Image (cartoon, rainbow, N blue to C red; front, side):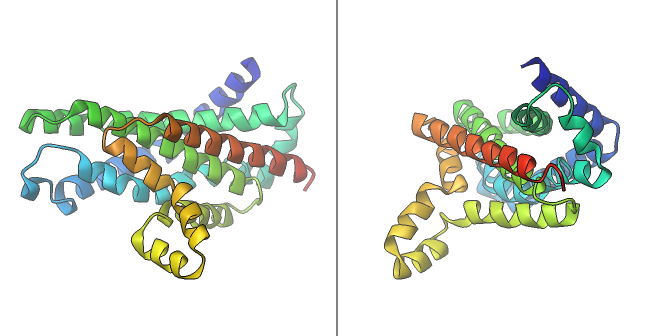
Length: 243
């Protein structure tokens, strides 16, 4: 575990040492504020809650999280520092987990900075803070799922642009499968595939948390999903270590 924490601290230091952290957080807060209170019709609905905030957050994550993960391994391979990293007394799995935890901690920090939104809705009304807390837990798990996908895609290439586009595409597949138009299309062709698509949809699982329901099956799904992609990430790093 000590090796994992060393890698995580190294990655967090890299975020802090560049403008990436500030730019990401500012853009994230600005977009979420605009979507929640303007485009989300917060004041028009005359209801103090963060439903609009959580409705938009998967799609904001879809674009911003790949911007974080695209450099995790692609930059290491482009600069040739991956060989130095993997010659340290740690395994590929520890390196993968350390980088993932650093990126996840960064996303959690960005989410924590949206606390003024919670204060605002509590000032304006009497929201269900239990449901809001469950929604934040779901957002943390959703961010972890997108990060795990992005890290695995980043390990496949040394080009950050390709890593970004690939991560967006794969995350979109797991996000959009629960939407009616996708379900209807799949049901007309392969009904069993439509059922499978709904079950593996990240957004469908996330919506349960938004409703204030913390289902152990959803927790197990996200844990398994993240673990699977971290395992793939480890395999990809090992396979392309000498590229």
